[in-house]
Image (cartoon, rainbow, N blue to C red; front, side):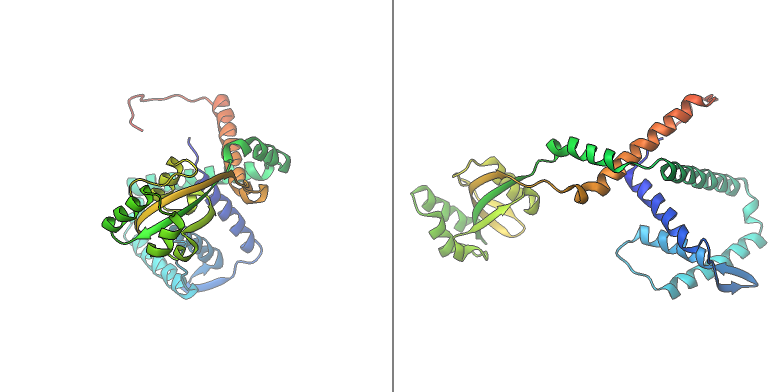
Length: 268
């Protein structure tokens, strides 16, 4: 059973949300005498938010959706649609899935990752999260032909900064094209790759094309940057260790269980 960080995050989100209606679960609407509860609305809102986190949906719209679902549910019951073997199999899987998630939540609640272990993991990862900062200048041009002309002037000894002031269409042109210090992730990939391939003091011999135009790039420095703080990276480390923690627990359950594969040719 392979777990993903996103799965655990969602599980924990559901667990947290359940606390808000544990003691108070009022009725939000009745449909043919059936009461629709606040808890149903909250679970539905969470599901919609998970599918489209950027889109805020009004509570009134969510309630209308739940009312529609209740009406369709009643129609399905009246037609006996829930009696089919396929439907029963689907419901068995949903129950299997939800109870397994509940077990994971319960395990993490009772076996939390300690702050000490999180900090130990952070320190162990510091070598893997080294940050490189680069310093460069560029001349941005709209046409490749003009870029070739400027590169020719550079090859003859012209000043990069002077050419940037004269020809660059970018906002840094008046400052000689100086971009200052930046991490590679801040720039578009084509630009960052070109800078990384240069040595300090070198400029590109061919213009680099990006969505912004044609760039002539001069690399002027490299230094070690400041790695993210423990608090910045803590959520990511927590999710990773929780995933590992649960997987180890599942492995222990498998070792104790009596598991027999009835049909080994069954496709996964």
